[in-house]
Length: 373
Image 1 (tube, rainbow, N blue to C red):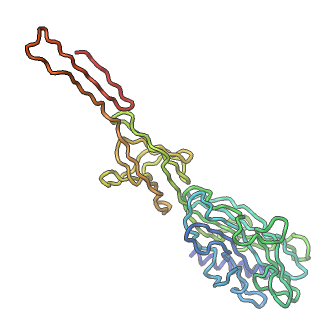
Image 2 (cartoon, rainbow, N blue to C red; image 1 turned 90 degrees about the vertical axis):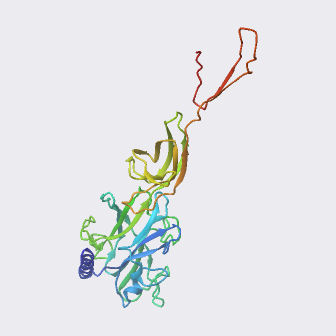
Image 3 (cartoon, rainbow, N blue to C red; image 1 turned 60 degrees about the vertical axis):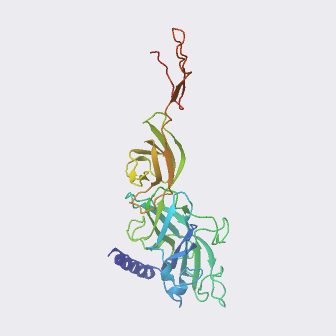
């Protein structure tokens, strides 16, 4: 039902926008970049809107370098997969909007508004706004192509067709280009969880003259100016943690506890009894209890034993278990003692004198105490 409502609201909004002003944001897209192993569609625009305009179909007007069917590369409803925390493998790179206006109107820099919502913890983010700069107009009437060479446009009559892009080379009208390292936000810089990337656009301008920005021309797919209309474009992604073993320490006393030290990336501080798992020597699965995580470090206190496939997993996020490792803790060795000496000689002069020698070896941390009987 919510998806149907979004479609209806979007249609009503776009229709209302065209009737309110001849300034028409007829296509928009979000630029996403993935660098995780095995990714597909790793560095490209994902369309949020496209409409037929100027005699061109919605397919031709879509922002899609590389071609294809624009409906298969939509931003809204897309899942951008799972990524390790702080890995930098999922970046909100930028955005692009195409507009049409008459020679008696003006369009000012559009804006992209985005926020990241923490679905796992039911926390909504705050919207951040970024201007989308002009960088390409429509070329000569003989080509009907934008000056950057991408996309058809109408270069005759009184209409002016323009392209705007959030990321461009500083101080120029040159887009930064695909495969650039620049970006708006590294989406992996957060702890483990399921997240939504929510966006909308705002366009200002002037309906009564070709200068100034006095009129709020409209919003693309948002009912309110602050993004609270509930009809924004949303894509999802997941951030997963990583776990490594830093060291382990054997117990210093028999029956005492040793320590297993771990380094974690992307795990909230807290005390856990249901996330750190291992198998014992009999391959029986257990949870470590009362594991305290502080600033990405956890120390597990445990007695001597076999701890195989130590791993971390939180079922709420659907992340696969972190890379596992094995640790075996052993008690200190028991003291080793021996007594020796020559055999007693029969018929020896009374009294009989027998010399015995006692030796003992103690393990690390142990000591030997002799008592006279």
